[in-house]
Image 1 (cartoon, rainbow, N blue to C red):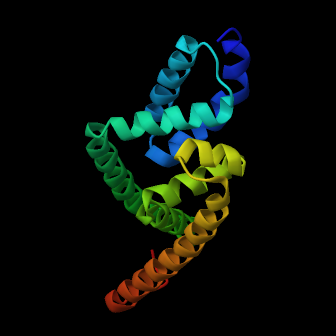
Image 2 (image 1 turned 30 degrees about the vertical axis):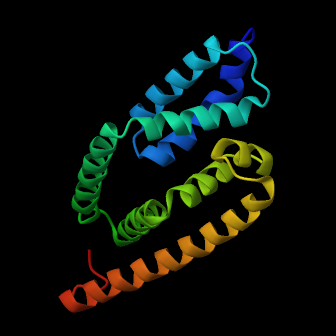
Length: 176
């Protein structure tokens, strides 16, 4: 790849954002992005740069299953720290933090293909790029995204009802 500097400038930030959302850890996302760009250096030609980079990054994450346990422990620690922090924040900040945590859990609860398609679309990948990165037909990307959005909304609403019910049972509804 002759113009890796241009490739890096054009795609590093969106790739790291995608990976951060995917992994829940900015440092880990940076590591995977670096490895992705190193592989791009070794590649002689890349037809669709953005789709190729996102596909390689996605595969690197999949291939590193042992790091999945690390990510889950990290998310658990963040959630615990967030709960501790929420109790010290004003109610509006606490509510925002709880909603953000709930949204992250809802995204994480999606099937992998649905989650990846949503995250890639959020980063601005078009249907052909998502299709190439995930090994789908272009025609199935829209269906996959629609299903993923519906499931995300359903999951989020169910988690919200469950959280509201827990708070009501504890008698702490409306207090941090």
